[in-house]
Length: 394
Ligand SMILES: *Cc1c(COP(=O)(O)O)cnc(C)c1O
Image 1 (cartoon, rainbow, N blue to C red):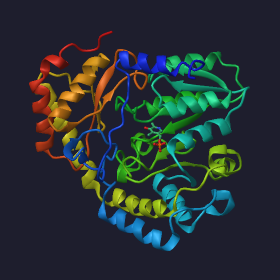
Image 2 (image 1 turned 180 degrees about the horizontal axis):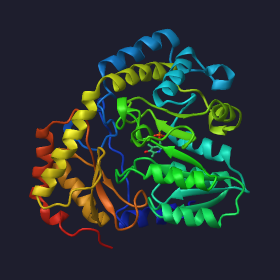
Image 3 (image 1 turned 90 degrees about the vertical axis):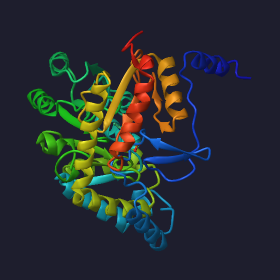
Image 4 (image 1 turned 180 degrees about the vertical axis):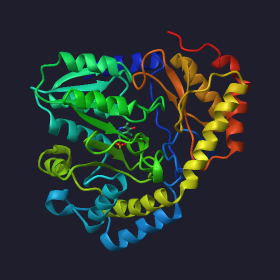
């Protein structure tokens, strides 16, 4: 029955290449400890960087909002699903990011598809960093524009490609913090290249928002880049903000354009209003509680110096994403299992999520971790140094 699509063969090939993925069933809330199979694990895999996903004030806000709004929104934003809660959150996100206006999307994936395909068509071109998130790459492909990938964080390569382009409109798209490496894009140089070449810059700050910059305003605030220099800011609410969904922020005119033209905005059900209310509370905490970011900074330094003491090359990343690259998928999978046997949860990240030969343990730190937790991880790595020894290989 599956002859035509050869599903069986593709599944077998995936398994043989150590690329088979399996879901694990989590039995309680998200946090630095998670329950799986009745067992508790110390979690170093979540994007809940500030420990807000299970925060009592967020839970309370969400429960109260459910009492007021109910659960479902019943329709898309343009029909009758746009609530007071959504509207207030949009205003607050715009103020926070220093932009004229913000627009909520139901997920970050949809925001990226919607924005890029609304801005571009066949006579245009999109230039993407090779290591951009899948949703940005898919948005570029969906738009039908000429699709180019420039070398990672390489403004010269980008400049050369822009020079040669005959396209009508040009959009340059980058992750602000690269999701699998944790490095920050050269945002100032990128914005200069864009303005010199009459291109727009779009920045996806999924991993920088809440974590970087004053009051967690993100990578653009940290790099001193305004709405003029990067007309498109997209960020998610499901990571540091601890809730769900995403937003795009920019000029009044740009946001109005998206409301008219972004198909993933128009043709989908609005996120539950209770999510928006919980996010409003989260946004307050993110701005007020600088200690969460200070803690992260301390823990990053602590982890990196611990790695160095073990003779493991520490990542250069200054963000909570601290990957340990082993290269080979099989070895990463084994290491991840050894860690799990020791009560540590660190998912093996393999191709195609990362390039071939760069499979890795993607360690993420959270403000709720303690030095003791990190010691447990370091000890376990130390006990298995031989599995970490040969760096990037075929
Ligand atoms: C997680 C992520 C997204 C997708 O956001 P969702 O809200 O999870 O759909 C987009 N871009 C980047 C860089 C991400 O890490």
